Amino acid sequence: MQSSIFKRCISLTLAILTVVLAFSSCADNSGRQNSDSTGGPGKNTDTAETDTRIYPDLPAQNFEGYVFKVLHWYVTGWDSRMNKDIYAESENADPINDAVYKRNMSLTEKYNVSFSIQNETQDKVISMTQKFIGSGEDAFDVVYARMVDVPPLLTGGYFLDLNKLPYIDFTKPWWDQNSVKSLSVLGKLYLAASDINIIDKDATSAIAFNKQYANDNQYPDLYTLVNNGTWTLDKMMSLYKGKSRDLNGDNKIDAENDIYAFLGKNDVTASFYLGGGGSFVSKDENDSPYLSFNTEHNFNLADKIFKVIYDPDNFYNQHTMQKPIDDTAFEQMFSNGHGIFYWMRLDNVTTMRASDTEFGILPVPKFDEAQNRYYSMVSIHTSGLITVPKTAAKPDRTGFILEALSAESRYTLIPAYIDKALKGKYVRDNESEAMLDLIFATRTYDLGDVFGFGSLAGDWLNIGSTGKSDIASFYTKHEKNAQKAIDKFLVSIEKAS
Image (cartoon, rainbow, N blue to C red; front, side, top):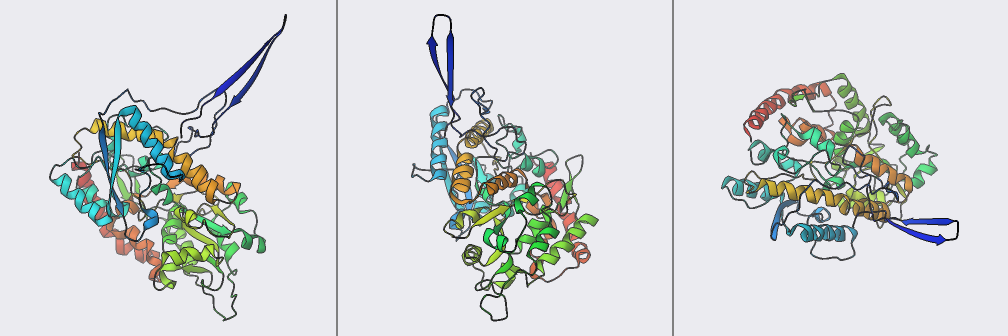
């Protein structure tokens, strides 16, 4: 998709003493708003007077047919999460595929560069990266390891500091400012999100709700609650508690036959924790991480989350109540009308495309009304971010191409993903479209979650499977190992280039 093109058609009618100017303009709505600070997709604000597209500060360049090589993870059985944002062989009428193809061809024509991708299982990406970098080989320009798997590569000094790559400008809106700010350590940044990719957008947490059930239960306008800041954990619980329904009259609630108030999984624990303004690890004025779990706010937030996940009459936890675990069957429960609320990642929106269920989309609720913004967790299990091997022969070339790809993606891939794939094809109402914009603008990352210090965040995510709710004891058990892991991590980062 090209940037918005504005044409002014001027019709001049000359009379003896009068000149009449008639103006008409036509605009392509493919432009994106460039004033947002988070790198999240924005709305088009083009007018006939101004082209609001931002262009990268890149000189003319000819890469003489260089093939930009990407190594990317996948998980066996996760076919829907196979990479689709790096390479497309040809156009096929799919909006994402065609946007990727057009983006890449645009850069091929402009800079004489082409693109390739090698998809490998998540564990093989780690071993391959360690091997080719360890041997000093310039095998790939960019590596996407799954975020939950990437810490050994980060602590092992396998990547370049992205801040040092020529041409990359992290102030530009095609870089996710939340990732840049949150994931740096001691001023060094080894992984970041940009508009090159949609897989990390798909990994963002949200809440879906069944619109018919909301009407049946006389819920207030949920979009208004979000917009006026009153969409909180307490509010959500007050709406769904007691609303599960035994449809088949067997005196028990099961998600296959009845209606559960809230369908979710262990991930709700982590998503609601970060969504409620909680943190595992924060950073000081020197950009150095420190444990920040042990606070009154976080403990109060944890207590509220326990009220959600340990409520079997209202909350269906896939990880404890579905045997064996079947993600496809679980996702179909909401689509088939067996849930009022549904925790999801945004890639679930596309899996609900065949559903007759009318649903809306909301951000994860806040802790309370005093919380000044919403936070939308990006899953470390279903996404990977940009990393550059330290064996890159020409870091300036890598930086140039990443900047060009990111900038072009903002005006091709992202509009196709948001406007055509999500909003145009799957989302059922205009209000949910606005919610998507809000969710993307509030994406959040936590160093403790991404780097897994002492398994604090990982064990917190899975606490729902243990039945435990003593938050003080939980933290005491993890504090020592988490601090040791941070100390070791800092030593490795200080040594890294």
